[in-house]
Length: 448
Image (cartoon, rainbow, N blue to C red; front, side, top):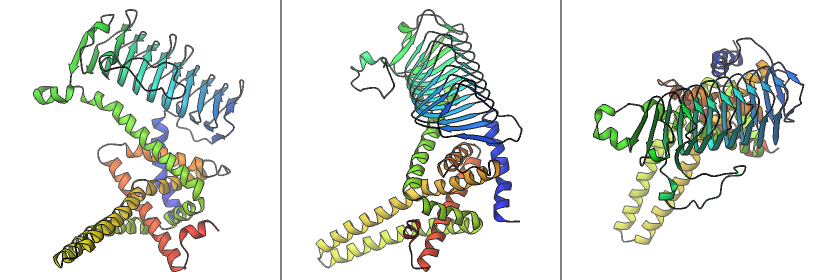
């Protein structure tokens, strides 16, 4: 069996994990790609849709999941699936039957928006307007969340400012900053697209409805700004980390909810960082990326082995070189050549630090970009063999898969990261070795 077929057999269950996580139907189907950014009113797409552009606007109907990227993403039509979007501004004013996974400077859920399942948001500002509806939970990590719509179940938030004037079916569990008037005036400007920046703190309108409990952690009690009494009462927790240390019985209580938002924010940050760096590589060194990816595909097992060896050699070698630098400096210091000893220390450790920094970037990011591009390309070859959309979409698909799989607990996510890193580093080393033996550097040939 060829290496490519073996990899595809491994990718089939991975792809199933990916599709299940976005609540897709379990039918095999093709994928639509749109780089114009517009789905016109009356247009119907009966597949999952990958869409990008400076302004992405969906006014028609998509019978599948939507993956959108642009400066502005607007959903005025119908999405019979889930939405994953990354943009400066996201605007939702139509029905989405699944969940929303969003990272943006600002996001608005307008009065006609209906979200069938959950909303996950990371960014600066989230606004839900009166008339909007979220069918299950809201999980948000942001500076401010201004909530006037209806959330059917729970809110879990880690924010600087939280305003609730709408309906919450169950509990509100939040970590929120203290009132800004006691912290001094706000002196920063808001990100582009954010019209209003409210002071930090918790504010609940007297017209709000909370069907469960309001549980919030903050630097101070903010009961004066809670204008109604939730059905489950109000629970204020002061300085939760110190509280856990003073009372061991409280350890772990509410910890799972307190970790949800930071967990989401961490994964979104990782995805954005990898996507930006990957885009830079595609822009500047597309030929080199293709050569290393081909090496990873053709020699997957050797790449894994050489990756382990390379990582061990570099870091153990750094310890050895550091010892030699120190020994050389001590030697010249003993024979009263102090200036030479200083020069050895300065040049030696500066050079070693530079090498380790570059290698660290390759380990942390470069290896993931290579393997993600390989996985995304193979998936597209499998699902849409006629697609000729360049390198960006395969890279983004692979990075999204990696981010999701890396987040799986119980050691599986760590194993994914370890394997991807080893294969990526090993493929880089094998590519460099081949080109060094031929008298060319990989960078030289990538520009030919």
